[in-house]
Image 1 (cartoon, rainbow, N blue to C red):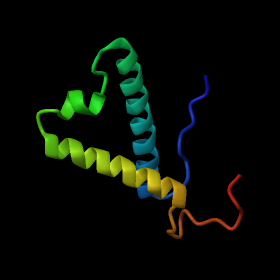
Image 2 (image 1 turned 90 degrees about the vertical axis):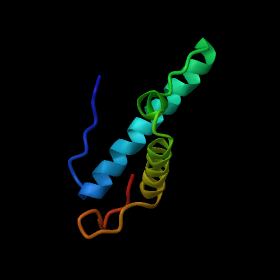
Image 3 (image 1 turned 30 degrees about the horizontal axis):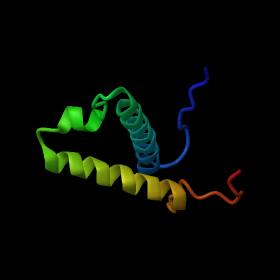
Length: 84
């Protein structure tokens, strides 16, 4: 099994990438929990007693996903070659 780590890009791009990975894993667990009749929403399990913080985490994961789609425009992340 190969683990892909971010070794380029700015701090915000790296944090955004990890937020997208964590969000995708969380949604996969939510779907699995649906079939197993269990609550496997890790964000809810960890932050359920703080609903505002839980909502902020969901907004940050969504913003990270948009940033991943659009791409970071800072000088460190900008490249002259097109992404493959």
